Image: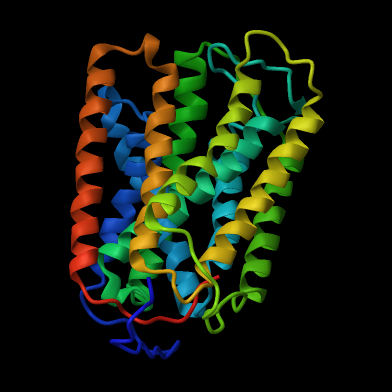
Amino acid sequence: MTNEITKTVNIDANAAPERGGWQPALTLAVLSPLIAEVLSGATKFSVLFVLVPEILVWGCGALVIREAVRRWRGGWTSMLLLGLGLSIAEEFVVQQTSLAPLPFTGALVNYGRAWGVNWIYFLFMLGYESVWVVLVPVQVTELIFRNRREEPWLRNRGLIISGVLFLVGSRIAWYAWIKRARPMVFHLPPYDPGMTLIGAGVAAIAVLAMIAYLVQRVGTGEPVEARRVPPVWLATMLGFVLGCPFYLLMSFQFAPKEPRVPFGVVMAGGMAWGAMVYVVVGWMTRSAQWSDVHRWALTFGATVLCMAAGYLGSSTWMPIDLYGKIGLNVVAVGAFFVLLARVRRQRPVQEPARG
């Protein structure tokens, strides 16, 4: 599908955002935890009230990341790196789930755990939270508001408020998980990972932020005219298939007994697959033939994967959780096809390549 040049987007990085940016900003803040937590089943229907702090943490976190990258006029490589930083903040600082011994039923607590870190679980969360909390919701929101895709949505005041709300939500999430859920729901003793590990997480976040700023121009040049892209149906399948191996990581972490495969081999395989996915997606999206319909296809396939994988542990759910998830998933699929019809009706908008 060749992009038709119908509108040139010229953005002054220092110009103030137009008024009305609260609509796409609020949409992203809600879509981020809705896709990653609710549609996947990680947040069950019976405890849907926790969506509020999730909006503050995941929603505001994704929004701040998106605003920073758009102000830099950067590409999705920068957004991915900042998404990895957001994941580390959650896993090492806020809820510390990659540091404390895993409390979940069926988890192999010692497999993949070394130097105070649950490495296999951490690797899965790095991929999941950077993609399904940040990249996928940002792409979907920018398809909904695609005439405003290239501009910041918030003024400085709105950006500061979003940052403050993120910190407030992080504090609520920290208290709810560490001080309430672990001791009262899972009946586990208090666990203190120590300032060394937490400090290492903070340092990693700072390094990722600096690299994201330094590589902001990576892949933002002119798209490659001669490069072909897969048909839309195949882009949908790729969105699903490319994410499947990340869920295999959890099959090692929640195996009936400790696998014979050394966890270092599992880690190496997971990181190699992640690097390959980055190269493949970057190669496709740099093509001049990459269209908004392809964007829709890739994000739809990825969303279907996270919804489908959520049923793997549903055998022990209460009926309200199972049927609630089924209903929300059906609504989400319908909403995606409504969005597709809207994207097909609208004329394409030219934009700088994002890599």
